[in-house]
Length: 389
Ligand code: APR
Ligand code: PHB
Image (cartoon, rainbow, N blue to C red; front, side, top):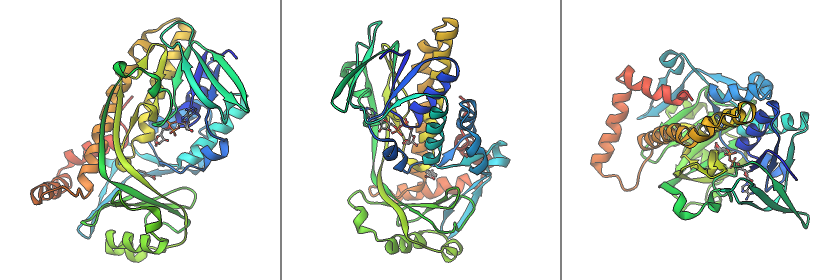
């Protein structure tokens, strides 16, 4: 097979890039390890900044997002039995859109189908080759058949566990990482949401987060020790504990139901530099991971795709490689700001087992300062709605 841009990974990053390039007349092939049903069965983030939404519209897949996604003008931080609102709209003039990543991925697949885009599922043993030379290629197997895809560029959109980053020699890439000593237990349930807006609750027993999804499911989460497993938490035990950590009025109003999905995600911050090796470019989770606290995961992928899309379009339509040359530097500058914010918000709200009484007082004071200063709140808000690309 031959294509211009070979994309490894059919998650949001890979699909969005291939759709955007296709609409500019650039040929792509997406190689995805899993089946479409498997990819669409994953439940992940749900808060989109408007920069991401704009890319979805440009990719002609934003219609359902605009119809069913909910504009959120603020969110709450609860602590010590009260809740305080972060008014994103007033502080920044901007808002976020709550729309599940699963739905967004479905829209991207539908978009790819509509224009006849090539997405190869269940591609086994995908490997990039000769990416430092002028003729890179990708190999994979499917149903016992070995296939080779010749391309100009290989784009690694294959997530944290993918093959692209790992194919780069160790002395050509540097990894920065922080692993947090806890995880988030997430429960998706078809229950009426108790609050129209997201609530992050800081509590001495650990963080709890309530968020809603369009159309109905509620997505609730709470901090648990990494030693816990999903089996340790019945639906009942989860909701009891969630109630304990949410402010009284919210807890009292909460109607609980049975879960649709339950999982524990460890919290991790991770960045790989640079995001380019020869003609292999990394984007999204393949190059960086954030803890979910600041809702930056998907939104950090969006800026990578924005830079890469324009860089590749400039290369093919104008013969201009400046964007490709600048990609890693530009993408990393924004990625690190997302890292800083996610780390800050995680540190602000979580109970760290190793914290001393002094550390806890500082944490309480950070929160008290935040809600006593419009400038401090504005800084939180501008990061939450997304810094410019
Ligand atoms: N070969 C082919 N495909 C692969 C391989 C491989 N060796 N390894 C992984 N993949 C596929 C995965 O099955 C997955 O569908 O690559 C895709 C990567 O998708 P994501 O992990 O969703 O990463 P990305 O598209 O960058 O999405 C950004 O933002 O909110 C966060 O983590 C959240 O998934 C989200 C991410
Ligand atoms: C989500 O809806 O899954 C979500 C919301 C807010 C976050 C992280 C994840 O900070």
